[in-house]
Image 1 (cartoon, rainbow, N blue to C red):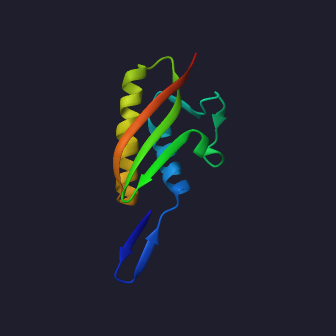
Image 2: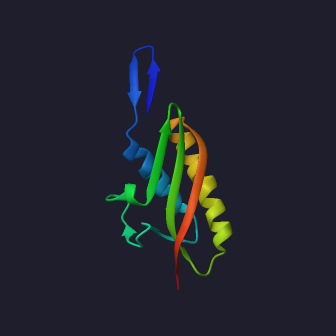
Length: 110
């Protein structure tokens, strides 16, 4: 993603946007972990792109986040809060418009 200013350009790496989304997921109570579609837990420092997919369009982004939810929480509520948190954090930190956030509950922890 590029932003043009009078004195130059600011570029934000796709990896940074993925990390912002991943950290937003982990801020929501009830999210146990980030997880791949193959059910492998993901560490935010490594492999976050396996659990958070991005589609970057000009100054906008679509996000798909794969999570594991704690069974003590309502899945629908957790996923809604994750959507909201990802949209807020990416928008606030990057200025990108978040068009769509899909959250996939891949696993429930018991």
